Each structure stands twice: as structure tokens, then as C-alpha cells.
Length: 276
Image 1 (cartoon, one colour):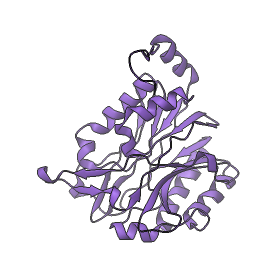
Image 2 (cartoon, helix red, strand yellow):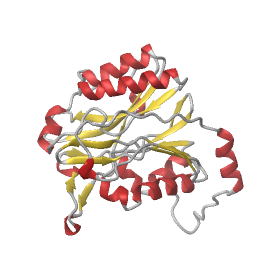
Image 3 (cartoon, rainbow, N blue to C red):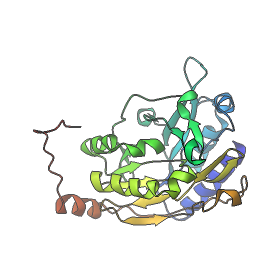
Image 4 (cartoon, helix red, strand yellow):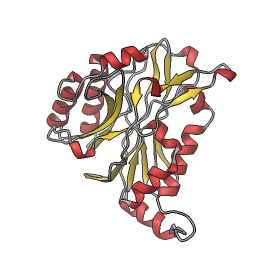
């Protein structure tokens, strides 16, 4: 975790120097364990986590809001953990009302095509709440995490609740990223919600068992890609911890949101199908 905190420190400094008001970090920014048991053993409460405390200090010293994905133990402690998204204010406070727990857990089985088998549900408890969008220096932020991306309903609900930004911090797998799922889903969520989509993504090899696809991306409410970062092309070429952190700076334009929504109003037929 100390290595990951150092990487985040680099990004915080660069973001502040670029004049950013907020920094969006990936899912599981604290660590990605080599096994389910390791993932559970490494989880710390927010107050006891050197990683979180370190980010709080960085947020305050650099006057920067930070959105970050991490792991938490359950309360009371159990054999499972929580996959959580936090919003840390520029005064270093964790804003409790914004804490989001991943709704949809990633259970993958690509063994029939010589791909990985991953069962997040073996060691993680799913959340049960869509957290209402919260106010930030760049707009109303709605929270999702990685595999939530495959489900349009939460994004539509967050738009109805007032979001103009929806975040998807992720650690997407290389096989599904290379299939085109990642970009396609991000652009679809942007188009159907008419929100900016901010998807900070882990990139590179974490350990001998796990490599993440990367391709961090910002998509505007019309479905156009505002910017993107590096992605893994060949997992065999990746070495543990070899990649340096990258930063994408963008400016949210409220007029783009207004134009998208006014130009193509989404007039839902809730007399025919249920309202989300």
C-alpha cells in the first residue's frame, strides 16, 4: 500500500500543479491482492488505513478533492470485505454521505476460451444502495464502480436524481477490454444518461495472477471521447509495478450537458414501462 500511496502522491501533485479541482483515482487504489485471503487480510478501516490517512493529508495540503476506490473490512469483521468508493474533501475530510459500495460484483469465467476465472463474490459483499449524486466543485457526481458499468439502470437512476457526472473507477480485465467492452459500455452509459463519464482505470500487472487493462477515459454526454490514457496491448509483456502513473486533465463544460439534453430530449414512456 505504501507504493500505491506514493503513486497517488505523484498524481495529486501533478493534478494540483495543473490547476485541477478534483482528482479521480481507480477502483482498488489501495491494493490488489494476489488471493482472496490476502485481499481480506489487507483491508483496513478508514480511520486505521495509512493509505486513506495519507490521501486525506494530500487532499488538504494541495487543496484538492479526491475520489478514490479502496477496500474496507466488514463490521463486524468477517471473511469478506467491501469494495468502496470515497470522496475526500479539500480539507481532508471523508464525506460519509458520499460513501458508495459496489452493487454488482465481478464473477467472470472465461475458462472455455483459455481466459481467467475470477469470483469477486467469494470475498466481497455487495452494496445495496444507489448513493444520490453529491455536489462537487465540478458538478453533481454519481458513483458507480467497474462491473456496475454493465448495468444501465443505475446510470439512468443517477441522471434522474440530478447527476451530470457519473464515475466508474475500475480495474477492468485485459480480455474483456480487448473485446471492446470497455469503450463501448462507457460511451453507451454517457449517451443514455447524457452525463459526463469519468473512468479512472488501473493499468498494468499487479502481481503474477492479475493484470488490468487500463484505458482510463472521459466521455462527454454526447458519447464523444474527451481523452484517454494508456492500455495494455499484451499481458505477457507486462512486468509487476513497471508502469508509471499517468494523468488526464479535462474541463467539464456544463453547456455540453445542456446541449446534449436539449438537443435529444429523452422522453421516457413510463406509461408503458416502469420508471427507474
